Length: 410
Image (tube, rainbow, N blue to C red; front, side):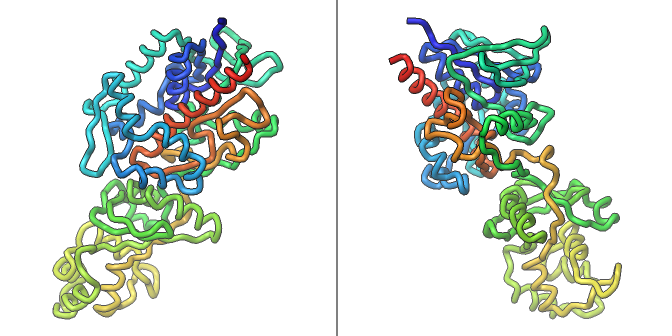
């Protein structure tokens, strides 16, 4: 029986996982990647240790995808975080759980896992073609730009795994949106996810404190109240705690034009205790010493409190009672201007609408063409959720392709 040919466009986690599944089933698989090498964004994620998944209870894990929870459930149920760890172990990459619950390879690198996967794909007969940029869909196949000129590749089924719109220099440039829209595929505009935000810092504050972490705070937004830390940037704020709130903050800015994140700068102490401690200090004690002695606040936290203080005129803080200052320490409102550009975001929201694809990840307007990964309209916080869902949707699409090809064979 002649093997069916599957063309996979995109050499990231979703595409490579699909290639692994399909080639193991005996299909002839070709993977085309626009960049000079495969898995570039995957390797970038590994620079900080490759947070491959998360160890929290799976019932909680599968609720981390917002509006896409229900649509992703089947793919995640079929490839859980434990399954991902077992798959990595098959490829020689053992993992461990960090203190935060995040899961990392013991070698703290992405490259060994990627090399092992690419070798297995090669051993399973997969053709890997770098520098093949998809240009268009033709009646007889998919057209690519290659170092040797344009090339048309025909296949029995196609998987698009082209990524979202963040980190375009690594290949996720969303250039696929226009040609798919021309083919009637419904696509939601891309928006930054897991991103930083611009804030109108004073020049002196930005110059002095950019790059410094703000540790041990609780941040509150429409996403709820979460403990953690973030970093002051020259433009505003970024870091894990900000990313956890970014979807809620981004959407509020889009809906109302205004958003703020509220910080508890002294989580271990009550407002009443701080107010009482401030009141006991002599009035001649400087604000810096009052903050340090009464609330344990100094350095960047004290500067942030000053930066966001109410002012009667430029450069002059309004006088505050002990109660007012304590209230601000416990609930400091930091107004945001806008999300940072999507090119800087860790991931993106938006993409192919769930209504445009079947339960098996096939595009309704392009029978035989499937999609997976970040090019579909879903988002997730950092912590291993993004990568797990990319792998899971790649596997789900591969199963859909195999089922579709089997039905056509019959």
